[in-house]
Image (tube, rainbow, N blue to C red; front, side, top):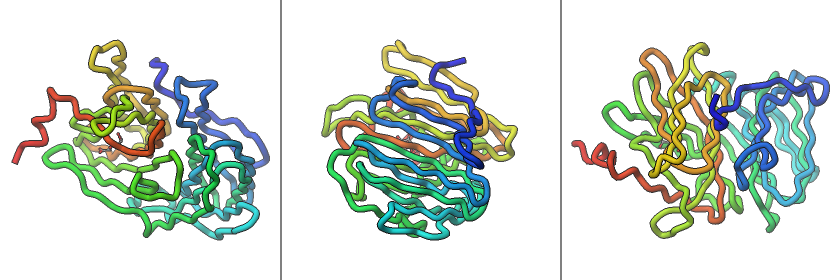
Length: 272
Ligand SMILES: O=C[C@H](O)[C@@H](O)[C@H](O)CC(=O)O
């Protein structure tokens, strides 16, 4: 199995708190992006002290209360399933703060981390704050909810976005990359994909590859899997009959999403 593909696990770290995924610089090739997927049983609580990292707490499904011990945000979260296709609530917590999450209902949260030195205000990112995009045409149409885009100054290095791709369509396509710190042409952002499928037994194909093909991994990605994108192009193909969801976390030396399309496939964009 590719080293870029992570299957879900279940590590109970406290009563009613199960860590499904944990990606860190110690267990991955990533230096900027880290993440956790955590399931919370009704009434369960999860607490974390942040060092020199910032965190976006995404209420993926279910309702939660979040506090940074100064402010409290009650009953955030808007959906029971990501496939309701409506934006959800998130909370941004900066470096050197402590936060706690309490499950008002059974909930799944994604904790998105990246480096941060300059402490910024804690902020509730309401569902209605997400900008929504309908990208692509023909068979690469997808719906994008920008949770923490580079146009939002709330964070120091973190970018968070979620993408819905319909049956038989491609996304992150034409293939693009952002693995060179070479602005204004391209930025360097590591990336993770947290995937869900509808129906659940589905899979997508995701390829992660570089121009020189020194990295070239094609994976069958299933519900709940995480894919790591340290470098390279990273297109996703969705089989007929299934819907794909993924949440992307990106971070790098500069908080700018400036990608580079693979020249061989850029003609896709020119079609009328
Ligand atoms: O670089 C960003 C990620 O690859 C996705 O968010 C991608 O941009 C989604 C898409 O445009 O299809």
